[in-house]
Length: 341
Ligand code: SF4
Image 1 (cartoon, rainbow, N blue to C red):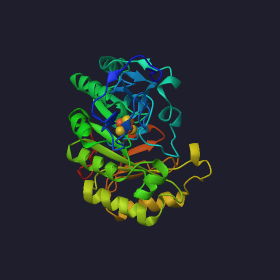
Image 2 (cartoon, rainbow, N blue to C red; image 1 turned 90 degrees about the horizontal axis):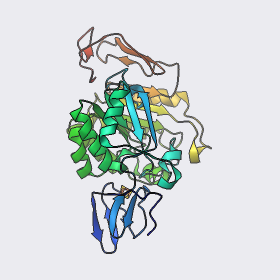
Image 3 (spheres, rainbow, N blue to C red; image 1 turned 30 degrees about the vertical axis):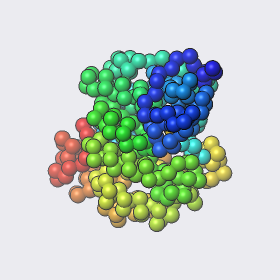
Image 4 (cartoon, rainbow, N blue to C red; image 1 turned 45 degrees about the horizontal axis):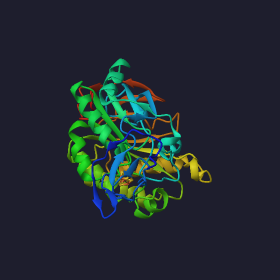
């Protein structure tokens, strides 16, 4: 039996035997995996009729990042966060900025061994009080992230997912009590975009976002604006209306600027006027905290009080200056700002 680059396997969860296949129900791809093969994510393999995770406790990268890099602007602003990822992804985005690890296979990487307990120890040893599962899609190593999040909570460490939101309800419900915050990519607001650009579907992402919000996880959304792909006024307005109606107008939304990458090197960077249009639409639709990312120099990343327009938090790059924040409220008028201290 050939195993994909590792002799260390951890039995997967959220799967069942269907005929001679192992059917995985961790994410909505619902891969039906033949003996010896892996699913779309490349990290769950049918070995001898059972499904195994190839990446339990196998990290490709561990860094200390600013919280703002996730991006999370309303969750512990200005604090460092230990960030780790593995390899693989359940999506195939043509514009992926992390394709070197998201599209890699286990055998391509010299992955480090890490236990759930070591994640907490590393977090505290690096003077962090928060840990993020990021760089690749955290959903696909759920068995490990779930164990690591549970241990982290025993150490009073905050836990974060930076995710594409393409996950099934059952694993989300399982991990939500141990997950403090999520930044969820909503990559576009049309099924056609998800099908063409990501090889996935929009609807499960919207369901994940709404359920995570209902379950009490702090969520922020990222919408990368790609010229001629997901940048129409109608699509961005529909997205903003959905945030307002199905989540809350208090959910921070990060519109970020596209730069040519991976298989979309022929698409130009997002024009600044499109970024400004997105901000205007978000404001018109009542969103309280729309941000503009990757545009440098502008004040699109500052937090203003939506009631009295006081500058509450100034950001420049990853520098954060808190100017008018008192117990999560505007220090001037008392408006609640949906900020987790
Ligand atoms: S987690 Fe991986 S193997 Fe499971 S359904 Fe999703 S892509 Fe397929």
